[in-house]
Length: 439
Image (cartoon, rainbow, N blue to C red; front, side):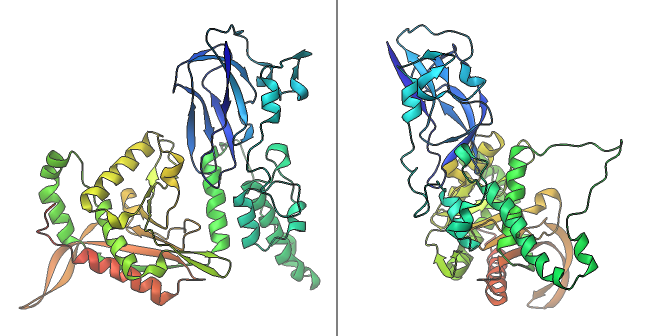
């Protein structure tokens, strides 16, 4: 007779907690090894937690929507035929009581382990503070020049009153508004009375739809990015006729030979990695006044989820992959994104992002930087257009396949010369594509 603790897994170096989305198994349910017990979510990705053993769920200590620290005991699995009641555990309706007592009964065999289980990182808080702050929260505080004393005053909505990313973004928004409004109040300008967000009116013809969890995270991330980085966007139009003709010529044989469909995305990524090699200061992050130059070229590619939301899986060391390798990586990540099978490590470590607005029929876009990166490129729809073509016999007008590229970059660190030069270089690599290339 044995009991096994199910621990909230560590989902990444900077992730210190996860939210329980759904219990797939309840108290009394049998589970096999690697069978999913619950679904969890972090601020980066949703994931499933499998059973480490074969047995029966004996106790569950947290409810849906609870935010739980990593390495915390979330359930007990009984093995080797131990009898378990099929009724839901009391902890599904309320938080577990202290000292292992629930409904007046003591559970000495399992509950003490839950009470005493503390993440190894729980002491990694701000210096001289008893309050825990995750690396993400501390990084945001550092970027916004929020000192320890001020950080202590921010109310937290996380477990045990911990400050979350959402709390920080909400505080920063109000803090910024207050700082902006205060000077205007001295001159009694009437306009300051209306500086708050205008009220939205509702009538019987409107439908109110609550944002899902991921849409809320996307919204927060986009607002934070615009608040952090002064965005500038540059555009170029490139002739991709050689690429279109080459792909049309080889795509059938390519799939038969390699078992993969080849799209334009890996070709675009190949050109981007070459251009980053020429302009490495695009592949950086900014930490205060320190520029962190990334040696790895990890390209994020925006992919659609079944819910309609977007996620950005990352192709690691893209500059070390040939076109076939890039094709396999692109197809694998896109397939797993559509099936909600991405792992936390699949969306971490990106140094530059590519998004294809042409998928939606758009000819160009002004994308928002995926923090903490400093640039993101959008590729538009490929359209046939009349264009002037230089030949040895003079200029002629011909039908060509043209597309726009747009690059949004952080003007704190990337100026117009660097941003414009990098974008032009990507375009030149695409236009110089060898139409006779073999794989």
